[in-house]
Length: 242
Image (cartoon, rainbow, N blue to C red; front, side, top):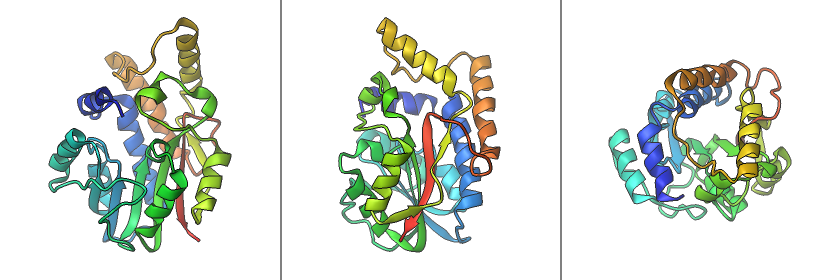
């Protein structure tokens, strides 16, 4: 990703509505769907500034990988131990068969060989282990945001499902989320394309709007996996071998 993306992440990952609400959604989803043991070993690949690590630590002992040096330093301070730098898909030096859950949260779209990356991730799982995956949805929503984040693709449910199958993984259902605010996002991106306005600035909106968006987005934690949500900005799933 461009340096400015990591800088904005470090500046806003504790206050921006998207980060805050998504952490609550992910925690609830893992608690309901992950089936993790009490002493789970967890690996987050592509942890960025480490903003998800405290949330993941609720479920067990956490290791992390981040290939950007500045972001890795920031994440290491949050984790309290060094963050690894092994890139996907090889994951050189990461022990195979070691983790109960691997989290790849908006990561595989950054990897040219996404199927190879998913295979490499699957190899690090213990028997019965799982992969928590989120990806950006809808190729037609491609914008400047994807360019500065160095995405290779946005996914449909069909393309993500096909990649998982080719990698030898099964999933518990491909579910949209960030759906309640999706119409606003579509409108904002359409306006940006019509006017030539760059939509890559991820700074939070004014305080009251930020709080409102956090409440609306965060409400989805009660819905995902319980009721089908309409199309959203992202897709979430938990995948397992075989």
